[in-house]
Length: 208
Image 1: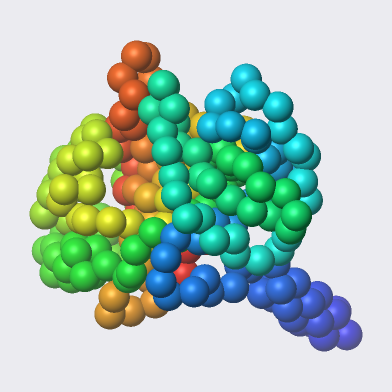
Image 2: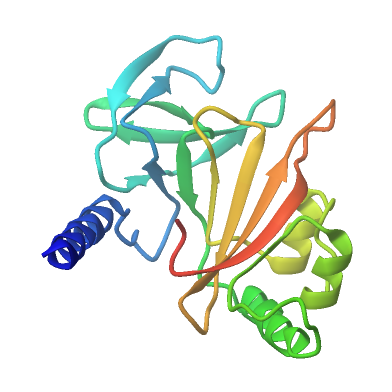
């Protein structure tokens, strides 16, 4: 009886998780998904301007343009219902490019490299260590600034910043040949306007 209850609860959890997952955005153009229940839609691309508190629409929003402010943070031009304005980068997932062949090649390198090591035997992978990244992926991404990452891997499939931390940025490259994602987490610090990579991970499925 207990086993049946646990399986039932697990089934309900999986259904709920699927319902909460963002649907696939349109193939062309830039689209945004609001990660929180509510977000501020600003009058201008400036944190000191007026704003309207809006509810997340539960669908992808077209982003016709994006700009950076004086501190190099991104702002997305958007229309949500009857309201138009600017969304800050934190609390928003931005659909940018297609699935990535470059990330797929890194994963193939990882599969080959892990056979030669005794400390890695998983399909998934995460590290904050520069040497481990170099050994298993064939390239050291730890500590690199975002322009260097983009030069190496191209346009990410998605990018996002947590609602409560605009200095953290996650670039997600969905692999072109399998149902996996490469997630590169960057962190801004000090006066440098670009984020530096603090961790690299492969995980199963689409962008979380």
